[in-house]
Length: 201
Image (tube, rainbow, N blue to C red; front, side, top):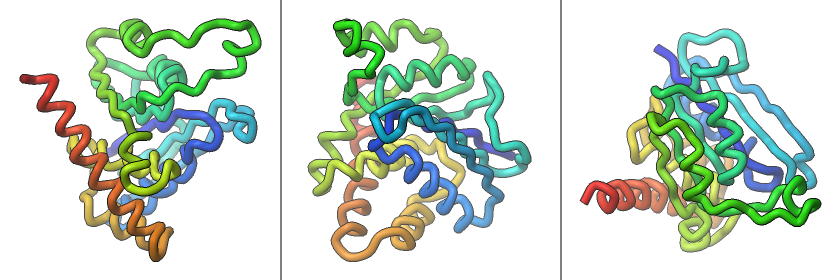
């Protein structure tokens, strides 16, 4: 059994930290993990992508069509990652827009999220969540990554449990920072399930 996860976003959003947290939680669960990072102009808000492979895996790069889950921290970067998806891939996308340099330099408008997601293959399931609002509710914008991880746990996509991620958070954070990230995890789990219920009603 294996789970292939692509995490995509821009520098400063905590993409690499999310990869490390997923890797740590899987390790706590006793699973084999391989992680690779691909940086663009990360320090300037450029593209950042992380591949996390859990289970019976060897190579560090996820092949086109082999992703089980895409975690998108930003809509345009999510769409870039979807180019590597298949109809079995599930996608969780943070709705926050960060205008890339390629658009701002040419005075182009950022496309509407509905237009962006409409460009994806209709067989690919995309779940959108306002992770920024939930992170701020938890106490810090920087906990966006934990909110989105919580969303993935809430949907039952990840091969480990909430308790494993709480242990990973405890290993990385202490005191108030742990409390913020613990709450962010819970808000992500609750938020994505609330969205799911609303969309099905």
